[in-house]
Image 1 (cartoon, rainbow, N blue to C red):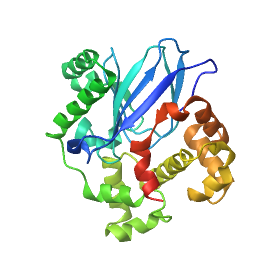
Image 2 (cartoon, helix red, strand yellow; image 1 turned 180 degrees about the vertical axis):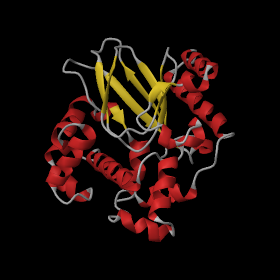
Image 3 (spheres, helix red, strand yellow; image 1 turned 120 degrees about the vertical axis):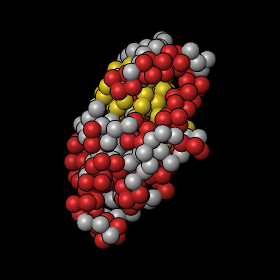
Image 4 (cartoon, rainbow, N blue to C red; image 1 turned 90 degrees about the horizontal axis):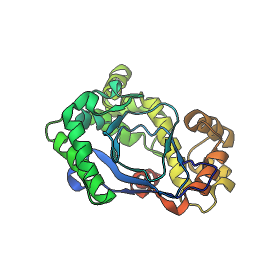
Amino acid sequence: MGGDQLASVQTYRERLPAPLAARHLTCVWVQEVAPESAPYTHRTVPNGSAELLCAIGSVPRIVGPQTGPTEEVLAPGSTVVGVRFRPGAAPAGLGLPASELVGLDLGADELWGTAAIALGEALAACATPRDAAATLEAAIVGRLADGADLDPIAIEAVSRLMPGRTQDVGSLTSALFISERQLRRRCQAAIGLAPKTLHRMLRFQGFLALAGTHERPSAQLARLAADAGYADQSHLTRESVRLSGISPHALLLESEIHCGCAHDHAASYGPLLAAH
């Protein structure tokens, strides 16, 4: 999402992960900026997830769960491939507690050494971006074979915090038969975020997913705010400024201009829409 004021030609495509990775990954994605394009400013909104991504020709990067919006300028001719972890699954694939991943954006070689460099070279040698994405996914599957298992309490908390499933985060402790302190501790270790923070991020992601089902969502903010579970449009606006850095109208208008049919978020948005 996002874009330069000059003409940009870019695409973003997601797919569901392979069955072996489905418990741990939300999606596998490819983003391409055409050689004749203007530089493309990519805006990322916090979604509670960590990613392993690689600009082809570079060393892969580990990006932990973010707490605020980020922007990255992609040069003409760029191709970036990535995998997105399900909230709570990153420690098993990346080898660190999620609490140590929050806000992180660093070269994977700082954690994995020469293995990360070799992975970057393997991705650069792939014939197509799709092949590169599959190679990155396979690398994560290989790491999962030796990784820690998922925390069932944290995973169930994520499920219950999906859009439309609970309005009262405090009810999680009784539903999961765990103290508030223990729930927070386990969510911090597995997800990197407190339950209330994750709930707000997932609700906003649900809003974006709903917006993606409309042709001109920027003109339907009141309806989208209600459908996404916000008290009113003002509530949505406050959350949008906090999580994306701009108003919901500006955010959706930006998407309409620069994304549209060039972006496919079906894999990551599907579960958010199913929860409504």
